[in-house]
Image 1: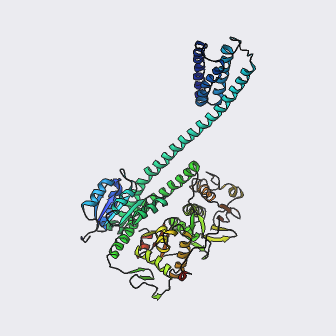
Image 2: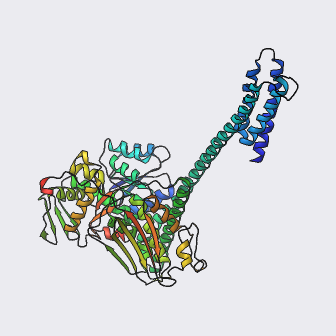
Image 3: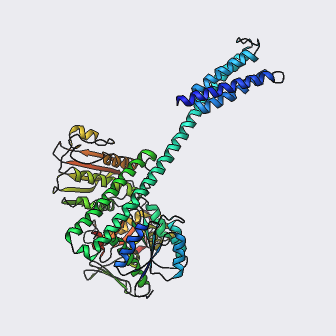
Length: 239
Length: 353
């Protein structure tokens, strides 16, 4: 984990995709290990410590979700899935299995790097560093449990704070509706999406400059919510 | 089709002849009533292989053989026993009914095979075309970040073009896939409670590249009712309306997007000040492959976009409309979606309400 260069395992059966992923990650000072199928990937994952896994959903031998599931059985290494369009249910399933985030093909390297960095940051936060999250004018102090917008403290109800806290802990990465409903309201309410919608709307009115054009608390349609992260807008502008 | 039914008739008639020979040889052991039932075998075979016509021809042949060889008087087509007459009529009815049933079964089976084929094609086209596009987009994005290219404005713009064109191609493929899915398997919405503003923002986000040449105004009320729809379908439909507005209004002209309550519905509106619609166009723009005669030669398009949008909206229980004051006077496209009450008895802790 403390090697000078973070190590990323890239799993995709298409050589051309692996090639640009390698180039893109190496430009950003990652060290890259490649695998073209699930078995190679699982072997590679046990052979050396990894800092990040990028896995394609469709692999020749096993489904990408199987890789996520198996790796999660023994490791918390951040996993980003390369997904296809029109498969929101599939994305949700992968996230519930333990993937940290996804990008939808075709994607640009900046987008993937933004997701990857967010997942890596969460990993280091889990280790105790970085107790405050800044997104634009919003500062969430996870240690002091305070939220300020442009320096002014704002009042949140316990459930609103819990929602924001969950998103902040995953800042830059998506959190599914089910995860949020389960954590904030409990396991019996995972189907009550309309309440989540109303809470998010209220939260946006407190933290967003223009609540109907959110820049901080972003919606991933059909999947969940994502707290933007510093540098996210550069990524949004697609290089 | 004709060939199959001819070969089915031929096959069934040979079967009738063979059965007649066999029954004649065994006539001492076979009851005359049983004969009728045995002749149903070639009728069923003909029905399954050739349909109603083949079944009826075979039934007539079988009936003729039964009357001639087995029903007294033997070797004569006349039938004396009225019970046998009833048998013969029943025989024809059974032939028609089984033939009809078999035709349906065959049609269903053929449809199923066509669907499987289409699905396989759609799946493989999707995969075969999109995988290389993913490589192109990804590689272009890495190239754009390399110092050598980032430092050269001309090269950088080429690389950007490479990426944008590949993304455009991917959008076209998505539209074709949507259209194919709609006509083959229909649309299967997966509704969930969603904030209409989120749908509008996602559609704008998706079409941002197209919208750069237009001043965009987005008006989303801050207390809109939630709607229970498949958000992905509505987002794609709205995206098609946005694409349409961009395509048929001059660069630099404003485009407005609204999400607003309208009676018992919620309305998503896309308004442009572009080429507008003639009365004929207003009527026909929702048709598949329809291209307005004014634009056919000047503007690229498949004539699928609005048709896809309409199918997605209708499958979601909504309606879609176009309004224009006439050619050159702008177009307003709108999606209306039903607003249902949702369960508001959700338990909250006291501090949360």
